[in-house]
Image 1 (tube, rainbow, N blue to C red):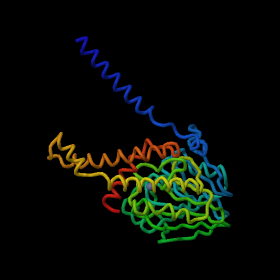
Image 2: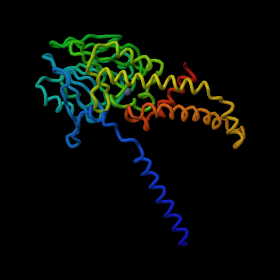
Image 3: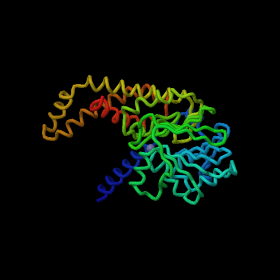
Image 4: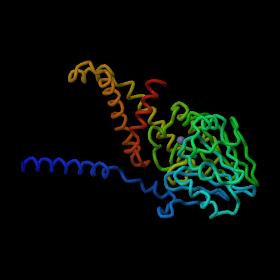
Length: 331
Ligand SMILES: [Zn+2]
């Protein structure tokens, strides 16, 4: 009995130390990444910071929105669900102008689900692309207010002395519509869910529903004249260099996965596995091949990027897996 207890105790200790070791063995966030991050007081829960004259970024440390203050009211770009309740308070810290306009960059609830807390605002105009509004009407989700004004392609909002350009170049992330928001006179650009400055993209190439378009979005961003880039997540304020670095990372992913996929012999890998388990479990055998491509690609990518961008050991395998789906079935 004592032996059994000892064995159980040893197993329990090794499981818990394994779990601990796993979390602790991840690379810490790079100093260069932390240096460009806005500090958020977790007691207050948000920060509102001026990044250009009368253009503010709001963040709770994980999501970002923007407030453009004009003499014709505040134009809010997105209303993340996580800090939606604090948006009005935050804006009041920097201006007495009321929030008159809300723009949805896309339909995802994490970026616009905070609109529910703005339903009390009088005559709030909510602008989105037609496809996003159609989707939201169909979803009938009380967190996401229905747009009051829609457009297709592009729209220029003239508010006070600011001209705010809303443009859809293609859908690189969501199915219903993705917007670029720019204020050319201030060299300000906001493109949500492509990259987070200082980090590799979020999981699975920022959850892109269209990798073919996602690969092209970096050049479309770089065609703009900007020196402040807002990506919608975490707290970093980006520049052109951040976009260039992420573009190089994503191109490296594409080239590496494509090369390793085409040079890995599928039948050879499956046959080696079949010697152990037979040929009945075709899913498992095929997955063995996919996993070998992922692991071999990861070794290379990790060595080249671990000291350049944060989060390589968290999300790069998911990027490779998403890229492999594209390379094998779409490219
Ligand atoms: Zn999204």
